[in-house]
Image (cartoon, rainbow, N blue to C red):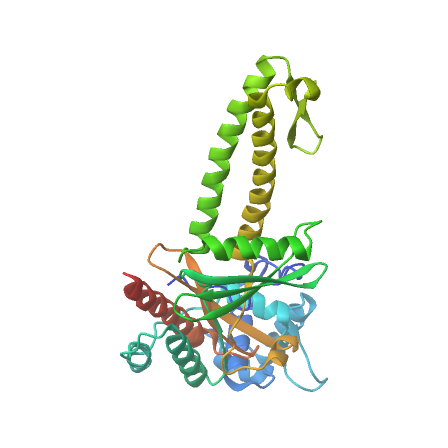
Length: 366
């Protein structure tokens, strides 16, 4: 089962010691303590552990092992006289190296399939059912990341929110509205974005963002080929030369412009070259905007959870992606709860739900 690691190790988080650093007895004590804690939610004492271990060990010996584990940062004691609980570092080690994942229970598998396979063609309803299902089965908050729209676009709008933030509003052919946010390239003005939106809306013709980008890129290639052909004629006549601006872009310097004006053909060539340069510059901006719009952060749909859960230091996230028919990750489903989650049960549930959501979405698009 390809379940994702949970809780996901944050960037810069302290690295737990390797399991190889623990003796067999230390590993047995640690595993039993964490499993007992996850089941009861209470600190675990040495007497309780000594009765649960696979080998017969005295409570005094268990206390010594627990002190060693505490020294390694894997355990903590909330009170002087209380038992121990795993630390965040300890949970990380347990999940990464010790946790044994079971299969989804038959009754739960049946409920997942029955709930998600309802006769409904609406993607929003499917994801809403997935969120409600996960929340009910795990008694935790659920998280659903909806896929970004790949339906044909009927209308596109760019709205400047701040110097480093632009909102793109996409209205699809089926009437859905999706908002995405991206950081604009330096120097891109609101008026330039309005002009880009006007151009795109005039030529969208039911294309997706990917198709629109390909169309603009193809036009740029054709224009560049024509530009090269026209420019080469002038260069061979000694009337122009290519030069670099130093920023990776080229420009054509025309010599003796006054002499060229004597020839209508030459003047027309110069004007066509200037027009092609302008068109290429506009299309470069368009391709960059389309890239940013397509890769921007989609609106995230949180079902059955509150945003404040993400700011709590004692929360864990179990999340698994779902894919389309091309095996491309298009979204994710998950569960948010306290660190004392039953990971062995919840990870398979989340993973199976994500797989089924992906299959259902792929089947609808077939």
